[in-house]
Image (cartoon, rainbow, N blue to C red; front, side, top):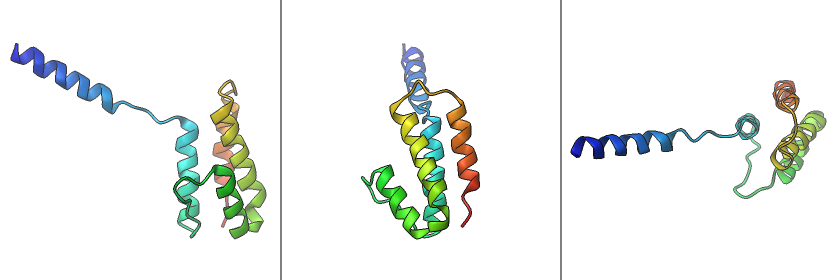
Length: 99
């Protein structure tokens, strides 16, 4: 009985750790980290649109890339029927950021 209880507890523990973050959120986190390394930090509760404006003001030469990245990210968050090409577009835009 002890072995079954321990096995069940272990199984539940492993199942909980396998929570995966959506790809668009992973890419957005990388986007925020890249900007944070350059001094533009996203405040807790700040919307992606507001953060994009803050980042565009800090890096006007990259404003178009920042705005497009944010637009695609928001589309993926709120229109999940978007195809996988949008993920590739986010990755491409992330690589285009030059500071």
